[in-house]
Length: 287
Length: 254
Ligand SMILES: Cc1cc2nc3c(=O)[nH]c(=O)nc-3n(C[C@H](O)[C@H](O)[C@H](O)COP(=O)(O)OP(=O)(O)OC[C@H]3O[C@@H](n4cnc5c(N)ncnc54)[C@H](O)[C@@H]3O)c2cc1C
Ligand SMILES: Cc1cc2nc3c(=O)[nH]c(=O)nc-3n(C[C@H](O)[C@H](O)[C@H](O)COP(=O)(O)O)c2cc1C
Ligand code: FES
Image (cartoon, rainbow over all chains, first blue to last red; front, side, top):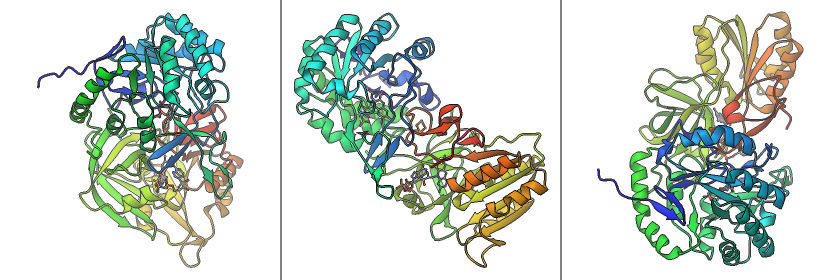
């Protein structure tokens, strides 16, 4: 079979194909290696990282909604040091790009993360300013235009790595935020983080998760991602590919010159699926 | 590599009004331990997530599950017909620890939780370990003939009259049983309240407990960090660190 060139250039981050897995849905890749060949994925965005190990939120953390999933994980992760020592070498065994998803409780922590990872062997840094499941940082940083401007500018000054900024749909005008992010020197944006939501346990008469608010993802939020004013690439289709195993979905968009890229991706997305269908026997739900 | 793919359904058979047995083809080379589980999904898109279901019994060619209908996912499974396909992923997690030094094991199950004990009793039996089962039901008992073949002794309990050996719960006579005889371990699976009581009673009798925990799951393989449970060593993932935990590790409070 002839190889089709499916490579994409996300404004400096070259992926051999546009299939990436969203942070938090794919662990550090290791967990899925028993089921799929990690060499087949364009890039892996690892579980959200913090400076110190983070325990995350108390159980229960998951609640399924009609075609969606509410999660309240709370950025549980082993900390950036473990990522560097254990998971960068692990992921480097595979022909895939590594995206480090970074989180902080305050600006200084975000900056420290960026400085640390600037010296490490990662292909891109994904600045997560849109997690609804933590008290400090997260969503609070991604919804206020002035705060976004400040944090992206500061992070840009801390690293020369490829920089992706992950945005929240919980804003009035996501385009406004996206334009600021671009202006401050980000190379790409990632859409969308989960939508803030809540479920009630009627019997217990209280919210299902302890923090009350959780993050909604999955097919239920696909129309929201689509509606986002910025150009959105191939989201739903790739979701169908990846969802067989989990709630995995690639949504990476170059900020500069989105037009041609989007057209390109759109036109090849069906091939991506086709190829995936052949190679990832896990796929094949409802086409 | 662990298995992920489609398999064919061989049988769906109701045991009670809301509990059924589902038998599927066992893929080649699949390793299964009792107490492990599979992530199962119907081929339609809805509902979104795979459902974790423990393996009940198995042989070289087939895997059997015992499933209780509690919502859409399990109801959909109950409507499957012979030769329909489902997605199967597994076997996953850590099952029961079948220790060679065990001589005598008591298995205490409640409701659909009796099913995962089947595989355990089968394997213990093969190892020449004496097994006794306490099986609790809220009404009609099921699969008793099968349990009687694989365990040395079976005692049944039902909340309803004239259905079982005893009216009531397995925990009613558990303390007597453990205090009058030398058990090396108690394996338990069922409602949390049952496992909690079993755990307390075994602890009081200095008998080791192995129990199967449940938590809502999305990935089933340790990637999403969604199935956390509290243990004496901090948070653990039920899907990867469990579902078998020792009684002295976990906190079974609601
Ligand atoms: C490791 C493991 C092994 C399991 N083994 C079996 C088994 O062998 N047989 C069997 O019948 N069931 C088993 N379960 C429970 C089974 O996974 C759930 O009953 C099922 O996912 C419910 O899906 P549903 O769509 O029918 O119900 P839903 O509509 O999703 O839920 C209906 C009700 O069940 C509760 N529920 C949903 N998921 C879970 C869960 N994971 N744990 C506890 N409560 C839940 C919900 O809170 C709700 O009240 C197991 C669960 C785990 C985690
Ligand atoms: C269980 C779970 C954990 C997640 N953890 C993170 C995380 O650590 N960092 C992050 O940026 N996004 C995280 N997300 C958000 C996803 O990366 C993604 O943006 C979101 O799920 C929306 O896409 P989807 O609808 O295709 O799943 C998480 C999502 C889920 C479901
Ligand atoms: S279900 Fe995803 S970590 Fe256990």
